[in-house]
Amino acid sequence: MGQVKVLDTKLADVKIVTPKVFGDQRGFFTESWSDQDLKAAGILIDFVQDNHSHSGVNVLRGMHYQKGNASQTKLVRVTRGAVYDVILDMRKGSPSFGQWQGFILSESNHRQLLVPKGFAHGFVTLTDDVDFLYKVDTYYTPGADAGIAYDDPDLGIDWPIDIEHAVLSEKDTQHPQFKDAYNDFVYGEI
Image (cartoon, rainbow, N blue to C red; front, side):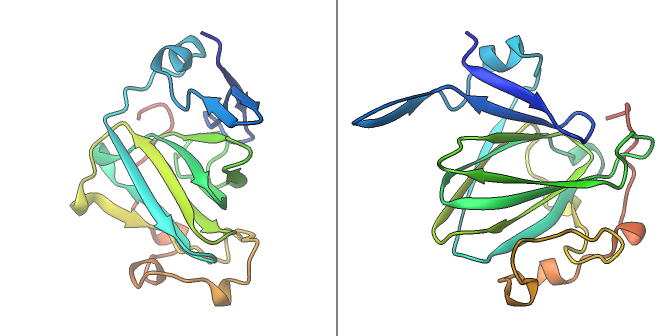
């Protein structure tokens, strides 16, 4: 017990989770996820699925979310390389509604980010050969896919790369601006 450190962020309900890492000349050992440790820290999420993406350098994925009842809480981390991870609070009535925050997640800092339901999420890779893993509390529903433009000028997300050189999927170039995006999230109701 007590193998994780949990820190609040400037966004309501978003947490940085850092497990203890035990290292020596051989390398390191860590419990990357422990249900009992998270519950002891007040994080009462039942995860049902693990996802894994692999990307090269300058890949930008986002800003994604699942609509309605398919909305997902995520616990994300990087096991190889580094990313700049960005989340946006979409929950109407939230003290941080419409605000975004970015975090460096890397294989060396072992940080994990708890992204609650009602947030759009994206990241850009800062190194080559990035392995990005995330736990989710709801199964993926293809028909509930949604997104927000990664380059929405009203949001002004400060990506740490020249986004003109970002590697994007066709889908990620087609998302609407935040003000025009589907949004039925209400703070305290999800």
